[in-house]
Length: 554
Ligand SMILES: Cc1cc2nc3c(=O)[nH]c(=O)nc-3n(C[C@H](O)[C@H](O)[C@H](O)COP(=O)(O)OP(=O)(O)OC[C@H]3O[C@@H](n4cnc5c(N)ncnc54)[C@H](O)[C@@H]3O)c2cc1C
Figure 1 (cartoon, protein in one colour):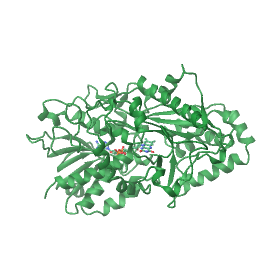
Figure 2 (cartoon, rainbow, N blue to C red):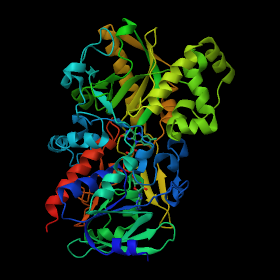
Figure 3 (cartoon, helix red, strand yellow):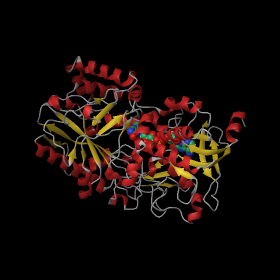
């Protein structure tokens, strides 16, 4: 064994964090700062060299590939984890997500107290994500709150003041590598897979984690007072499914383990035609004084969602479908054609995002070329300016939203999924392969349709505009189901629960039946909300670092 490796495996660490995505890095750095006298080990599967295929992704099997992205499109391995390709959209969750609803079967420790508590950590989280002040509503940002999303819009059951914030996007590996290396109490081991825990003692304490060197497949042991599984939702679930000995003191494996897999339904089924002045429509980004990009969206009031039993959903203004040349926009056609060029397309966007633009097909190329020619010189100048802001500047333009003089915009929905035990992850008979069974339910799809109808009626009532659907009512369910691919955002499969009868981890993220194993992943979220998961996960990582600081005594 190399001396460096032998030295790294020598101590009994205070905390061993498995996985170095945003969750693992935030947790390790926070704990290290709060406890300069304690020793932390960060174990990461991905090596220093970027790897193409890896054994984790290739041992995931999808039962319904139509509804789920390929495993390798869902995560990245290496220091920084999936932040290597994430979009950087930072969204705060809503009160309704923490309220007692049928979606959580009344068995979740998510409640208003936890919502208030987690809010104490969001400002600190926003520093890691580099997304500015942790304020997510224009009512709290009077300097940016000049006007409504479109002329004549009135806030009520539909709101237009919630904003998403955009990270640089921070790539946690390169951004925090130096901080990790510089911290004297933090050791990083790359190229090692966290595998199996020793059996817990009668008090639920595990002392040893077996790790496997990815290159040589050699096994080593790591000792720690506490272990945190921060390997992303798929792998956190797989580790617990493989380590059922952890539940020995419960005499049974929590029935929720691997179940209630949720993501978001996401796509476009309608456009909105606003009736007011096109120049008064807030279709693009708002930038604050520090240059951080923000963007507003339609949401629905907590009371309304609760009363109607509908799932939390955000809907934002978007461009028409890129691949359909009927938009007659030369710049969009040029960008669509660029995405189709195999090598260039891969450089412009990660596969999952590229797919949402091209829909995986070459479509009406001649008509697109005609759009480009007709729209010259704007067809080239607009993409050139976007290219500079999106790929060259340090704080990247997070997306491309183009002004429409007809005041006509596509609508993009991003909707919560109900927590169904039928959406699940299990181990195959080989005890290694993770089998994912995932499909949006009828309730999920119906909620998307109903909320579009609510928005349509509301806009008409305000005299602000109206929706124009792209499909007949009969076509909508299958279109929504098949365009909403899961796997990019993952929650539910190691859900928080008030007991091991209803959850896998407790309110402090500690695995039920153990005394020192924690999960820090969006897999602990019992619901999926409308929000992207990573920002809230960062806040939970900071909370856990604080909790561990209190619980691990000298
Ligand atoms: C294309 C794309 C765009 C996205 N955009 C957004 C967005 O805009 N906003 C948002 O909120 N979210 C977004 N996400 C989701 C976001 O990337 C994840 O929520 C986030 O990265 C999860 O962080 P994590 O630390 O839990 O896991 P990860 O980032 O997946 O990191 C887990 C790490 O653990 C390592 N690991 C796994 N298993 C083991 C093991 N057994 N032993 C040791 N190490 C292990 C992995 O190699 C990896 O480095 C996006 C995802 C994708 C794919």
